[in-house]
Image (cartoon, rainbow, N blue to C red; front, top):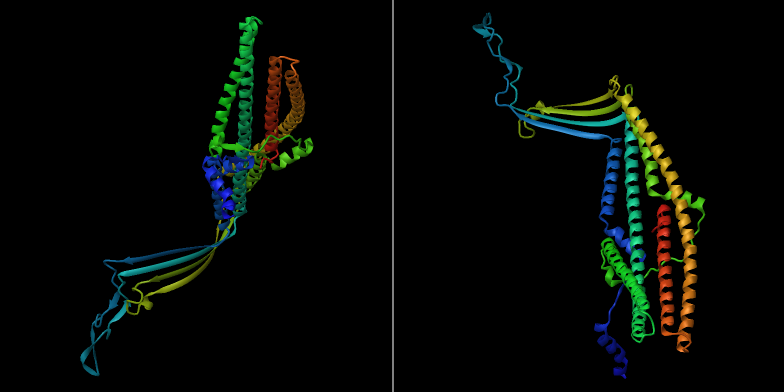
Length: 458
């Protein structure tokens, strides 16, 4: 009983070495891999992080700053002090004493000898009070630059998703095309061989043989062309995803549904979500913030700062020197400073004019991009709609060709038509399938463009 239960497992183990497991690759996974391993995406991510750090730097200018300076000096020849020694002004007799009295009667130190060491410590706490909007404008500029970096990152991701989607379906189209053309080649080889036999038997002319060979050569040429396209598409998809696509099965089929095609709604969605347009809007806001920054730097726009300074000086080495505290002094200074530009020879006026021009350029760029985006959306909708109904037409032709082939096969089996007529019906069925495949690929490209414009690729 135990042996019987283990038999299926043993059979699978023995069979496993000969089995081939094909890894599957979906469109979503391919897009994810392409975005993850893209060097351009990584660069944009680093630039986005850099912009975030720049924003933090700009915000820090609103906060107080503490600066500490210190020095320790050693003098080889310190200046001597001033001292009046005993008897420096002579001696005078006194009635009470036989000996004359010195004048002065003791040493007097007016200025002590300088220490050969000197220490200085200065700590300054600075806080901007009013900067005519320059700090706020700088923060706004840095914030917008951060947002622009994020928008550029999103734009690169969207472009990478578009490219991957196009290449993915290019591989899928080429794989199926090659398979169908190989099948058609086999059928045409049979037709050509049958005609050569009939020609040898004197039943047909040489022209009919050459006609069959020409048809065969045509399908062989198309097959080679499709194989080359498949090779290039696989290499591109392998490069984008970092996977060996040749050994993988693409499991996401062509789309056959028709999405909502409300042109006005799609235009609104594109204007709202298209990364390049969002970047331009932020460029406009950035130009406005830059103008405010330059305005704050123009004449008669003052700046006020509050400084709190602790100044400590000393002569003797702390702790080690005797009575070292007697040689040290500390002072706390509170000050308010101002800076005002009065005249700059027209520099600020030129900067403001340049900023105004940048604003107009951004506004014009937004206007042109919106107009172009609306036209592209309209064109993409037209391509999707016409592509969908062309696909439906080709599906009907394919169904018709399949039905004709089934009838031809049945007629051939009943000896109502020749083998060549049945084979030509098979060629017609394969051709209809290839035509449908081509239209499906074109429809997928139209969908990709529409989803790219409306920001819905992933």
